[in-house]
Length: 536
Image (tube, rainbow, N blue to C red):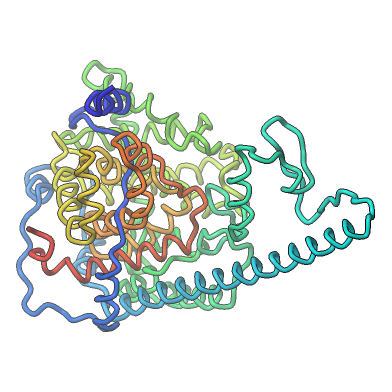
């Protein structure tokens, strides 16, 4: 079959029609790494140079829409100081220093791992040589050779179900040989749950708090303890990750759901929670009306598909909560309504706010064991924080999804400057950015990363000015660059699309996300204030 024929068949199998949007591949993508750019950025030094003279920002589609449309979020006196703080930038020197330290530490760890692997390999070679010499001596002396079985590693299953005691017993030429040897050479990584355990301070899979993590937690508590929380300082601390114990209150503050003034928080929570359940009483019974039944039907279909491998989200009571949240949001935002992908955006908020009430693992937690008042609070808080997130990216979901189309085009232009080799490679095999990057923008990389990584990523998005709407572009570019070698190894359209839709991130943790964010910050620092650098 011709290349065009393969491409058409693949496209037909992997496209999904989204109401009010373009037809797209629910795929994945990742950006390439440019050693030259990396070296130049390091030479430039750690201290960022600010661009003189700020240009006024152009109005976005959503800003124009917001000015003429009633929005679900009611801005009141409680929110004035939060909105003012949202306009301020982080201290770039602090963040740039953090980015450099993260990348430097990661490089040192990689070098140490390579040295350890080299030492282990050398020791193995010596043992093998010694064993061969011993066998030769026995052979020369006429002694009977007895098969030696190594118990150095645990029994490994073969494809036919048998167990072997060592790799040397596996049949030569077995298709498993190469993969088994590769697995043996890889550094040991702990099994990481899909959602962080309670002991994971930063959803990293680490079983206990280190001294550094305990110190960071104390700093968060000090900032949060004052009568008026310093949101600027809270953002600085949050950029590098938020400890689990204070993540719920920190997300509520950084999203603008809660006021900085401590005395007003409880009354704000009461008011907003009552307001949400007022919406439920007013609108939810209309879900089966002719005017809304299509919206509700689509939500009802999508909810079971949300994180299907995590038992928490397959519980009927959790799915009912998600249905109410999404339906109320959709009918209060008629310009966009419900679009597939928005269902994913509820899950990080829900998990984080469940952690306010439990002290065990969340993925298998039975929410019916929670008191009804706690469940109602989790539901209302998740609704309002998701609404605040969507306020900044709603043009991603209006008719024809213009926000996503603009961002995908910007990603293409950015990658063409960062790594022209990868860009040309994808052009050569007729891979369009929209075919894989649509999902990255529509779902904010939630389909590409484990949920624990998404939560860590969102710590920084909440701290970064315009994190979800602007910084996400640079994260996507850094993510694509991360898979440079794998992309260049693929030599046809179908292989590239399968790779970009199934990137191997299942075992990612905090370290990988921190490096990704550090690289994204460098790209933003290099290109954000100089658009001509990535426009041809």
